[in-house]
Image (cartoon, rainbow, N blue to C red; front, side, top):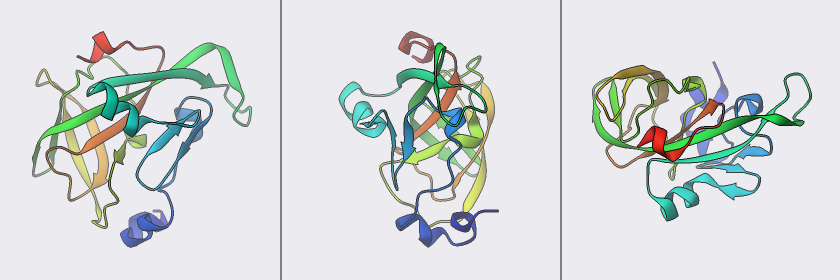
Length: 157
C-alpha cells in the first residue's frame, strides 16, 4: 500500500509510485503525465490521437536506469470508451502486447478517488487484464501503460 493509495489527495502534490524499469529509459512520472526522454506522452496523444505508441530503449535490468542498445519498451496511450462498474473498455487492441498493467497511469487529470480494480477490455472486445486505477474513471480518460518490445501503432489500432 502506498501513500497515494491511502490518501488519494496526495496525488495533487506527489506522483504515484513508478517502476522505471518497466518504462522506456529516461521516463519520469509527473502528477498527471509521464515523460519519455522529456516528451509528454499526453501531449503526444493530443497531437496523434489515440491509440498511439511511443517506443524507446528498454532499461537494462539491475543497471540503475542504463538504456539498452538492443531492447525496446513501448508506451501505449489509449482512451477509455466505456467505463462500467469494475470494467474499462479501451480504444486500443491490447491482446498479445504483454502489457504491464500494474504500471498503467491515468493521464491528463489528478484524481482524488480511491483506487479500484478494473477488468480491461480492448477495442476488439477481448478481456486483456486487470488494472488498478482511480475509482472515478470515466469515458474520455486517457490511460498510458508500458509494454516490453517494439510495438507499432498498427498493432494497437
